Length: 393
Image (cartoon, rainbow, N blue to C red; front, side, top):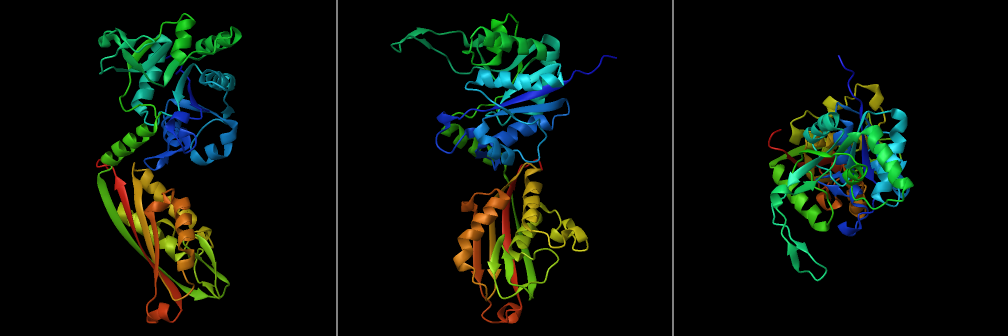
């Protein structure tokens, strides 16, 4: 029985994405509630036949990269070069010590690559040594001269749109890149072109129309709309929490430390706002409540910061292919006053949950001096969460 071939992947993420408009490098922008690079890297890091994923990043993006892909399996990132070609060679050199048999080279700006495309890439490289995913051209293509006049109409039946991941025998594509560098060739637009120049026959395999590269602002708008149309299972959950006051000099409310004459009597930090939001999200998922996931009988949650509970609840949504559409919490108390801190609390909830602040609402009311909140014995909170899931869930 032959030994299974070892497959590694390179994720090229060092570009600046200027054509995508304002907002920073496009690979770190969000689409469908997740960063572009997180979606792209996750596809490879979770694939059972990919043993290593080598990110290639701009050194100026080191911190934002770590935050964007937190929790995903990957090699230590290596710094990219001035061109895509230089960045790919840097990734290949970084992987050389791992001695992969096959390497997949993928653009981080293609966040919708599927497990099926990756599997086909691995199989094609094993058969042919060099292969790329392609999609058919559906529009008529014209060749024009410098004046913009049509010179030719190529047969679209023979035209294909090249995608990534492009797949190669590792030692062969590494030597092709090294040779191109030695000879001063730095003008190739993809790795298949380098392979062709080096004399390799590049095969093709079936790509995926959804595996498109995000390039312009219009691409982001279109894909956001497409993703929203797929998340048609809209659900709403509600939550409620209450904590009594005890000794202390502050309370935690919606992730914000608020000075007060008392503190909360609670197993964790007692953040009633975040606790209510967690229950609302879990309720929308029909996935129990905060107590079933973080039981107060468990000593490890003693004094725990509640931001981790909210992050966990949001992750339960994204793990099912969904996204949080809206979060709303209402605080019920006489004091402390919530109004002056409302926007600070909204910003903190948005930061913890990864939801845009325009989708977060914080409100406050009193109970007109009635009941335990009116007597300032504690604080209550109600919350609602709207989430969107794929219909298949």
